[in-house]
Length: 437
Image 1 (cartoon, rainbow, N blue to C red):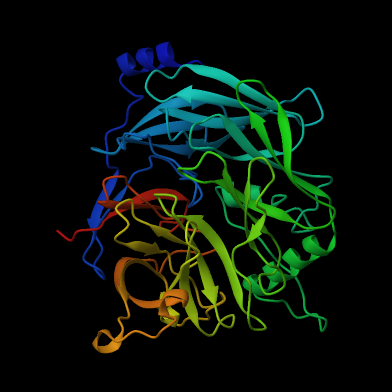
Image 2 (cartoon, rainbow, N blue to C red):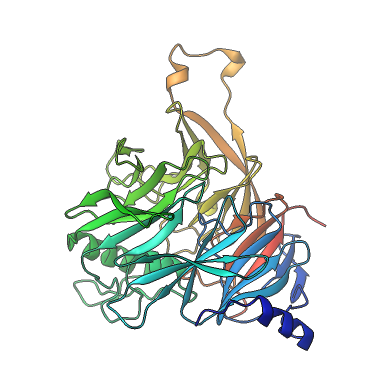
């Protein structure tokens, strides 16, 4: 199932078919005026979840999942090269220190243990990193010494008929589209978004014991960092710069849980990042800034009515909130490596914002709201710093089905936004150029 494919790649290149010409398709979006390229060669290709690292530390290459394994994209020309072959592989992330793609493979001869592998992005050489007897791996720390995982005492499918993969981490990695469905008490069907809330609540109320753990890559030692008798622990991620800092969430309907938390790898400093102050206030889809200094998240006060991208500065506790219009609300946001812009991937009219015209990818430029005439309130330093976004539409997503999340990332040179879409009927990976032609 796993190929050490340096020699295989060389033979394939001699045969003339393994390194693709790129891009496959290129056009100017008639609505936005921005250049779009389709990177992927075949249906079922996917980029990683929005907060997962998928670029080399040098910023020249990106890894993607393809139907028969994992491939490498060279960003300067969008060429696609096979890296590892295997239909049952799960691409996890790249390293922030080394030119390595990490992936997981389930063992077929036992009770579901998972082996984590590392593939050198340049040579294709594969090595075994660790075997995880229970649970799944979701992140690696900044110096690539620790894996971060989560484990649940039992699996509860979010969609009882089996059409939805089990557990939130798998939902985020799936190439296809989520398939939530549920009926109201009168027998009429909920919308997709409402059905998702029902299924999330059922999973939360199941009270399944969970753990967040680390695995020492050098020694294989497994250490429990957070344990819970009933909370649903999810969305685990290491800081991009601090090897000892973890962010995770209490999963479930966002208006019901205190979601965003940080903790140190030794289990100390377990802290709630955002505490709601009104009923139906929600916060979530949290992510670290590229420099590791801020945590950013979707904030709504209340849910579905008033929209913000909120930030929390780890060193000082300072808070900054940028306001968004209803049509600008997005499933996920992200921040450019130069910290000057944010992205938003929009949404459809059934989602939480119920926005009538939000099916676009956006580039947001933050604008702070200054004190009038330079006159400051005595306690202004301890208050939330407000701002707004100047929004630019990047891609018309009118043909996209939002059951597949676009999951935008910025390329390391700040020139492109990479995303996944089914706008042409099947999941593919695309990039849109930030500067207009």
